[in-house]
Image 1 (cartoon, one colour):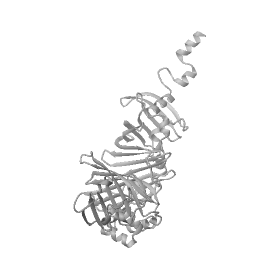
Image 2 (tube, rainbow, N blue to C red; image 1 turned 180 degrees about the vertical axis):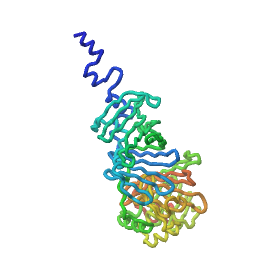
Image 3 (cartoon, rainbow, N blue to C red; image 1 turned 90 degrees about the vertical axis):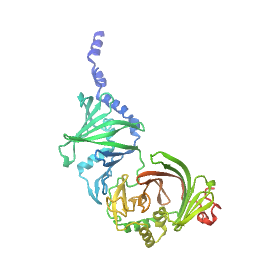
Image 4 (cartoon, rainbow, N blue to C red; image 1 turned 45 degrees about the horizontal axis):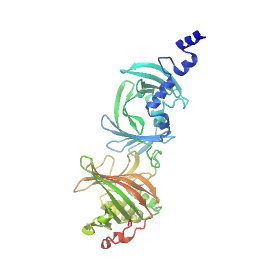
Length: 467
C-alpha cells in the first residue's frame, strides 16, 4: 500500500490531475480564478451595473463608449461635424450619422451586444456555459502567457492571452462575425491596467485586423455605475422636431406639465486659476421665479452681496448697497422659465434677439447623449448655439461667442427629475476653452415660498427665503 501511495504521488492520481493539473501547470479553472482575483474579484464585478470610457486615437479623435449590463452599448465617435454613433438597445443595433438613422448589420449588432461584459467574460465563462480549453503556456511577443480558448458557440470562439505573472489580459483574438469582415481576425491588445474603484481596467488598447495594426487608443477616463438618463441606448426615432422652431413648440408643449414656476437651491461654487488649480470655494443661495426673476446671493447671507435679475435689468449689491444697475437679461431663464410662460412668438423673438439663428439646426451627441442643436450646422462650434437633450428636453450645452470678451461655453449635467422637469445639478463654465468655474446645486426646492419682494431692489435686505 505504501508503494501504491508513493507511486500515485509521483505520477498524480486521476482526481489530482483533474483538480490540480500537473505539478508544473495549474488547471484552466485555477488560471481563470487567478485572473478573476487580479481583475478585482468576481464578487466586485458582479455588482457592476455598467460603465463608460473616453478614449482618444493616435490621430486625436475622441470616442466615448457607454455600456449597461447585460447588453446595451453605444459608441460615440466625435469629429468636426455631427458625431457618428453606433448603438445597441438590447434588441436592435443602429447607426446614426449626419441626421440619418439606419439599422446595423446583424453580425455587428451581435458583437455590440457582447461589449458590456467583455472585461469580465473570461472570469464568468464557466458560469455562462461556455466551453473553456487551456491551450498551454507559451512565449508570446516576449512574454510568457497562458493561452485559453473560450467557445461561446460554433462560430464565436475567442482566444485569450493571459500574462503568466500578473494574470491580466494581454490580448484577445477572434474571427469577426460581421459579414463585412468575414474571415478577418480581430486582435485587441491591452496594457497599462489601473485600478478603478478596485476593478482593473486597461488605460491603453490597440486593435489589429489580420496583420494590420494595431492602432492604439489611450483611455482618458473610466466611470463605473454611471447614472444613464432615460433613452440613452434607445433606437433613435424619427418624427421628432426637425428644425429649431418645431423644437421650441415641442418645448412649450412639454412645459404644460410643469408643476412649479419657482425654485430655490444652494450652490457650491469653485473658481479656477489659469493653471487649473482651484482659486476659491464659496456657497451661494439662488432663487428663480419664472419667467424673468432670478437672484444670486454670494457667500454668507450676512454679507448682503447679491445680484438681482428682474425683467431685462440687473441690480448688483455689495454689503447691502446698490453698486450698479442696468439693462441685462440672464439667458438661464430663457429656456427654463421662458419656455413655460412666454408666448411662442415672444419666445422666438427673444431667441433671435439674443443671437440664435433659428434657421440652423441639426442632430448631434454630447457626452454620449443624443441632442438637438439650435443655432448651428454640423461642425460649427463658433456660432451662438444651444444643445438640448433629445429625451430630457433640457439644456446640456451653450456656446456664446461674445462680440467683446472671451468665448463662453457652459455645460450642464447631473440632471434630476422634479416637478415635471429635469433640473441640472452640475454646471461648468469655460472661458476661451479654459475651465473657469464649476457649480454644484444642492437642496433644490420646487415648492419653496419665493416672494416677489425678494426681487425688488427697493426692498433689498427686508426678506430672504433662506433666513
